[in-house]
Amino acid sequence: MQTGTYKEAVTGIKMAIIHGHHPDIKLDQTQIDIIQTKLLSEVDANPLGKTPPQFLYSKFAQGVFWITCAKQPTRDWLMRTISGLGELWEGAELIVVDSKDLPKRPRVLVRIPDISDINTVLTHLRKQNPELNTSDWSIMSRKVTEKEQTLAFSVDSDSHKVLARSNFKAFWGLGRVIFQTLKEVKEVKTHQENESSTSKSSPQEGGLGCPLRCHEELRCCPHTGTLDLQRGN
Image (tube, rainbow, N blue to C red; front, top):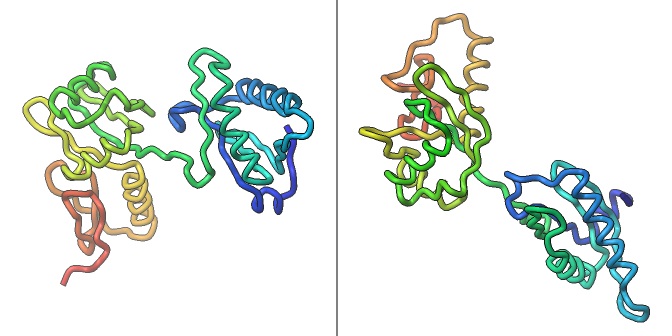
């Protein structure tokens, strides 16, 4: 794979070749090799006298084939070429996006009060919450205990907006389950670790169902699970 200088990489037009369901499905090295071979063949097939595609930099990292185009015509050529490659392997759905438009799907965590398989959980959520497009969710991790399970999902942006409007609560059975964003969970965990290492006082339990263990000077926002660091009067 050809590379260039850092200056070239940042002065050109930086593009990303990714799977259509990125970041849930990421390209691997074998697939990148196939793409690169096809692109080089297309470069060689460009007729003499016609504006040639020109690139400054290319790199594979974290499931993305980064490629920097020298000028706008090369960007246009790359877009046309990738869309015309067809299915290079089974399930291949390649797209090209500007680096600033690289998709980042929201990720959420939820505790389900039974141990049904993932497909059953998703179907159940969709039946009681029709606005949640669970068919477009991807499982990131699963932890099962005797009577419940904790699931981390990558979700579509529309479902994330629906959850946000409902204070990240969804109907489940005869009650509701509470979702948390993974960013929020990480912030809470970091706070707990910092409090544990800097204070010897015993933490007080939050209210019923509260996932946080807060000290007296902290106030909890029950709907979002975020912490208000202003001291109470």
